[in-house]
Amino acid sequence: EYITILNHELSKGISFPKARENAVMIYLNDIKKYINVMTSSNNILAIEYLKALKKLILDNKDTIKNILVGLNIVQEKGFDSFYDKFMKVLDIVFDTNDTIEDVFTDALVNLGVNESLARAAAQLLTHFLF
Image (cartoon, rainbow, N blue to C red; front, side, top):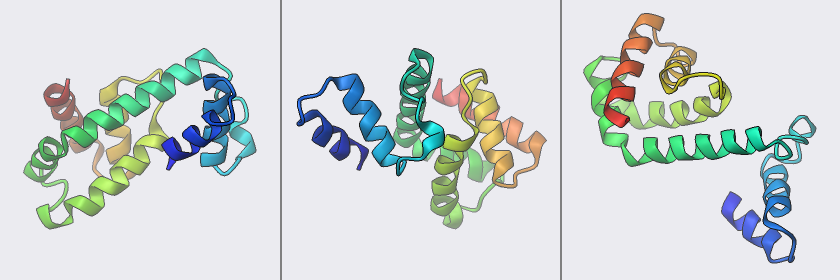
């Protein structure tokens, strides 16, 4: 959906940074608290970092499933639902000052996983994905 919005904005003939900023605001339903999110190079870098992280996670869904099921964090039949929630929570807990392991830990804790187990899972995820 975001890509479609971005392409539409680019078709107007405006610069890529402005088109990206417009697309993000449209995608976020013009939430005013995000008004300056695309004006800082650090914010733009963080967004690109998060996109790369999400792609990496999407490309390695089976590895993530094996780790989380193996640690009894989630049952195999409930993994897809848990995984969808995990991806949404990543957006909430992502902070550019955190390590990837911290982001994974925070996401799992936010989904109700015991903190020590979440940290162990995050260490394994970080090891196998990076």
